[in-house]
Length: 78
Image (cartoon, rainbow, N blue to C red; front, side, top):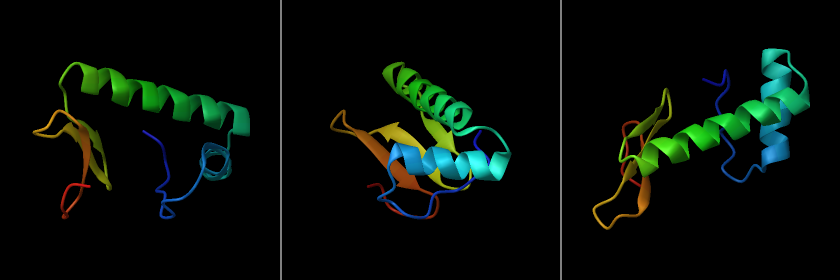
């Protein structure tokens, strides 16, 4: 899992990759690759009907309407 938490909900991929790189000591390219792999794993799990947790943040699930929902830890689905 990625070693950082994103507080700003409006961050774009390059900004997230830059933060990951800074906090984990890898290049921005490697950080972007890690982010891509994580997103692909989340999508793969969801296609298989699995919940996908993001420790410390919440989890992605399929909502009752079939849409993807994010349930923050200790909060309501968004």
